[in-house]
Image (cartoon, rainbow, N blue to C red; front, top):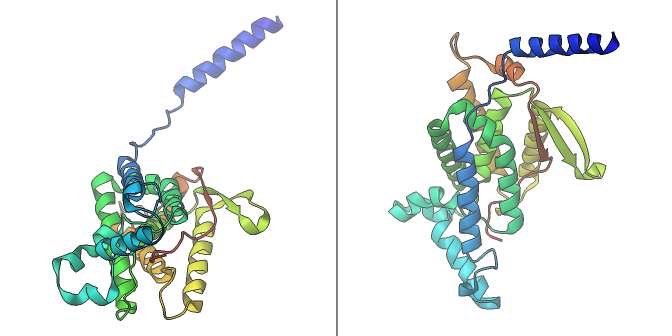
Length: 269
């Protein structure tokens, strides 16, 4: 009798499962993966990785790094000269990184947050959003430091825009964060808490930074605000816009993980 009852119960559970709607998985975030691969390949092939013997060692390697940044990075003082090379610099600088820590920190945040934002925006829209906000963040930083000759490189401004869009589109998604001051204890929080905490750190760092650019905290702030405002303007209007609350509750159980620290700087090491 017991075995028969268990068999009946299993049949009921199986029947109930067939009636439940299947969870729909969005398309693979191809653009996010492509951006990660392109940034990684460019870095490994360049002089900053230390893996390409063509750039030499010691003083030769340092000279190659300086020339590399000047060629592909943004030099705020030269950005407004009107030359084609200077105008394209914000775009090329998005794919150049100054160190392994700079690269891996950026790619970690892009991997964690980029895929879900791409699924919301669509591949083409997400690609344009990433490139446009990244260029505008670098240009905004260059305006603030218009007389500087220090090169500016990295995707942190574009990735900060992705974080801003994520905050609006998926504020209640669960984020597992590792806090260094808590011995890297993994804790789960809503995305809005983690991202606002990240933004405040950037804002405080920007206020205390010197007039000479180092870590480009201002570019992070500009990118984050641009991403949030774009998501609000694009998805928060009209009856079909969905707003932050509706979109957040839809993916309230999404689980992502990241280290709760800022990405590294975007300036020449």
